[in-house]
Length: 158
Image 1 (cartoon, one colour):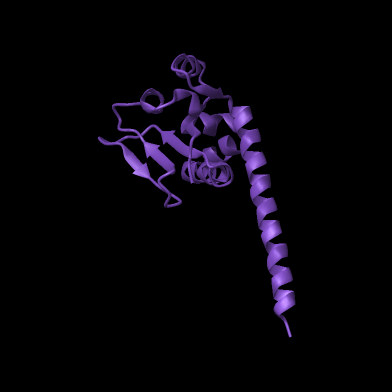
Image 2 (cartoon, one colour):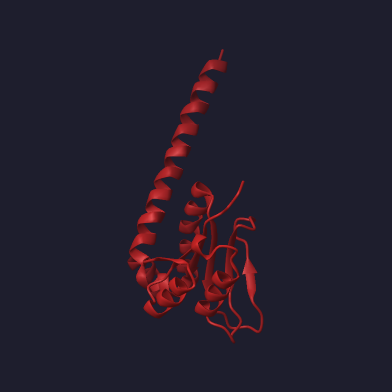
């Protein structure tokens, strides 16, 4: 399976821009991050899109987590010496084709930087809609699988 498009998400920016996640973050920052990760997995799983969610970190090293076990879905925590914007800019700069990088952020300075590098800006409201469409496709696929399995079970019943 070839993953050509790469969605890079400024995690903290999206947590603040997405109303339900912003409300959850006030109560439980870890749960808000987890929900954002889970919701983004729908794009990864339905669209063959590489997803990298980047958060500002606190340590000395870049921390990479792979919540789904796939190398095409990563959550990065930057070292304290770098911001999420810095890491996103580096990833766009190193991409074989920056035009395949889609960067979700509401930060207008970051928007200008990544667009100048050739990447595509995804405003937070567009990311919410994109996730919603991907979740609907995922739900539809599960519903189709359930119908198919029900037919198979019925056909094999005595």
